[in-house]
Image (cartoon, rainbow, N blue to C red):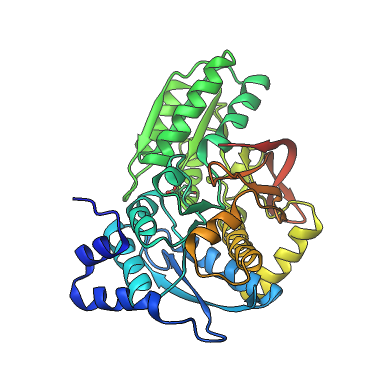
Length: 393
Ligand code: DHB
């Protein structure tokens, strides 16, 4: 049974001692100068650890650059590793952070299933939940306390499909990771590409866990489409692009296109020449030419000297900015409803360009860029050459 009060659900899931603590919490006056605690839950180990490393560094970069006091409150970030693959672990960590550590905001969420598992807790504890990474369309609908600073797969995919149809790609196979964001990408690509006159001769879905891409890419090669559209979670692009080259797809005349997840800036420079010319659509490239991005690169490198921030880092940096603004606009409130209300409709100039938190959907509205992988000064970058302004999910 679902109980809609904070008491009920936390009692049902945590037992007596934690319940007593929870009931006492609202009675305790906020100590003068007490820190505003944020529970940051990320995959710091496991197959998606690059997402955790990027977001953690970006949050630290934001606080070093903009200070730790916002709306009169010093913010304190409590980092927890959920290992990226177990929704129950993410939910348990969120619950412990809310009940024992008294965090007043949750943030992070590297993959969709982890965000979905935690959404009911945010609702019932009335704690804002800032999704910095996960990108399935439906996520913010799962709790009125969710705000998102990453992107959505349909938002990034439709411009790619339209660009492909306008640029000589008549037949395009799709290859997506077989879970919610992959299905979102596949659906959006199919709709937009066929509406623009294109044909999809082959659709393949690869497993999220321990994937072997070789047989799937062999099928693509046998089908010989003009292009292959790819979505995979951040980090997986290294293995996919390696197999793409080894299976001889470039020689067979198959162009590589996708959302920017496959040519993630964290690993792009190590992919080699076979990805040069690949066109992807996304909301952030480390090569984005703006003063805000240059400041972000500098702050990020002060935390992780030899890394390049990717789109996950952009989501983390903007998510921390959003929380800072929520605090500034409420004079450091701990009231989840007031904090979420303060986030609705907020606009700012991000390292990626202008962004807004849609007041109705609590999702991010942003420019989507079409980029080509090119070598500049010896390194590979996603060079933006077209921009579709202010795209909604
Ligand atoms: C998701 C995870 C990713 O690493 C990514 O690049 C896009 C989406 C997700 O699980 O929602």
